[in-house]
Structure formats: C-alpha cells, structure tokens
Amino acid sequence: MRTASIKRKTEETNIGVELNLDGVGTQDISTRIKFFDHMLATFSRHGFFDMVVKAEGDLNHHVIEDTGIVLGEAFKKAIGGVESEEREKTVRFGYAIIPMDESIARCAVDIGGIGGEGRCYTVFEVDFGKEKVEDISTENISHFINSFATHANFTIHVYAKGENEHHKIEAIFKALGIALDKATRIEERRKVKD
Ligand SMILES: [Mn+2]
Image (cartoon, rainbow, N blue to C red):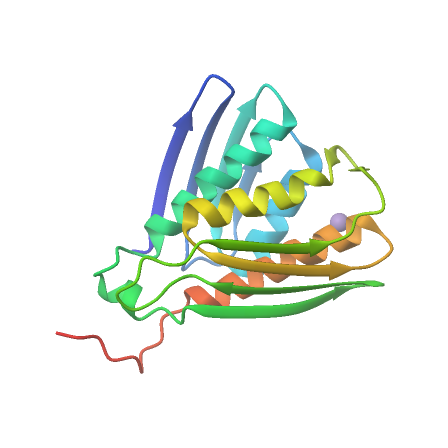
C-alpha cells in the first residue's frame, strides 16, 4: 500500500497528515485557514490523492509552512524507499499546464527514480499583484511549495500568470496535483533489477 500517516507537533503547530497515493481524491481537510483548505482540497481532488489533513497552530505562516513539511514527508514515505520495487517503478516525471479563466499555471516535477533519493529543488516564478488573497498572504504559496519539495525531496517548477490571484493560485494547486499524479503512477513496463 502506497500510504503514509505522519504526525508532527512543535511549539508552533500540531499537524497530522494521512495520504494514499492510489486513492480517488477524497479529502478531509482542516487547517483553520479557509483558502488553504480550498487549495489542499483542489490538489487532492485533481491528483486523485486521498488526504486527511488536520492542522492547527499559532500563525498562518507557521501552519502553511509546517503543513508543507508534513505533506512532503508523507509523499516521501508513500512513494516507497529507495530500494523498493514500487519506488523503482514510479513514472518519476510529471507536468501539467492548467488554465483557470484568464490565469494559467505550468508545473513540472521530478520525484526521483531508480536507485536515487530524489533531487530537491524549487523554482517558483509567479508575480502576485496583491499581498493577500482571501485569508492568506500570497508569499506563503511559494513558501508552502518550497517546504513541501524540500521534505519530499522533489524538484518542483511552478510558473503562472493571470489577473485574478485566486484563479492563479488555484490553477497552481491543480497543476501541482495533476503533475504529481502523473509522476507517482506505477509504470509496469519498467524493469526492476532482481
Ligand atoms: Mn476557488
């Protein structure tokens, strides 16, 4: 089973994540930050990842950053250890170009492959016209993706443009979910060494 359950408690946050990579996109998400819940739900739905995320903390910045850490650790665990057959058979690369009305987001990922622990890198080229959207600061979006990539050991590139910040960010989370869905699939044609 390609699943993971991770809990992390610090003086700032208390976070639990359950993840099933082979799910259907069900979700039970509560971070007490409405827009962030909306984005995680979008990511889960379009990536077909079953996700339970329960997070609370002192500041929005800490909750978003630490949820990225725990979700990243969950992905790292669920895709399997470096020597595992399932890990060696993962597709590894994935990408998506997703519009939302006037906005468009491009996302490409490398989750690491045969015999490798992955390569951790984040490129985030998005200009925001506003400092806040709904109940979060736009600067926390890149912070979340960088925390996630670092702890999952993934390379993630995100590029987006548009007029409406809500659309732009939602397109990013859809693109990330779809790219990661492709990258985490099992490729049966791939030979695994005995
Ligand atoms: Mn929306």
